[in-house]
Image 1 (cartoon, helix red, strand yellow):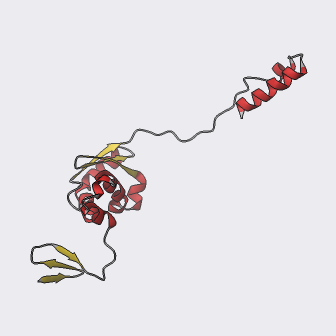
Image 2 (cartoon, rainbow, N blue to C red; image 1 turned 90 degrees about the horizontal axis):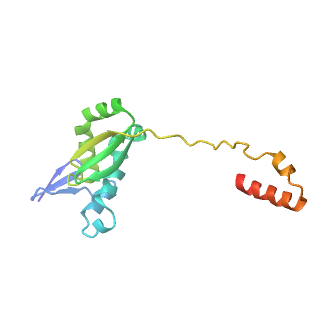
Length: 155
């Protein structure tokens, strides 16, 4: 016997069955329940992959789920202000993670301030070797070899 509650049904043994017309359930929840899936997809990958869905795009742009230590998800944040604000939202975030991947994978969230990262920079080419050095070589064949080797090194 099943009791209907909105889009889900609850069976006699208190298991939740999803309505057959409901959109496809979260794939990570289904994969997490497979017996052979633990060798293919680790709980860490499931938890880190569900982070963006649990917190939303705007928070996911400022944070990064790094790793899962036992049942604690470690998340890097930009600064101390973000860490303290997200710490106050941790129970809501845990509830959203539980909805996305189930209760057995993540039971705690730890926020860490991420180390500052350097932006990509262009290499500044300094003129270590000038044209005058090549002009100082008397032999034209050696001068040509020297210039082509220098071009390869600076390319």
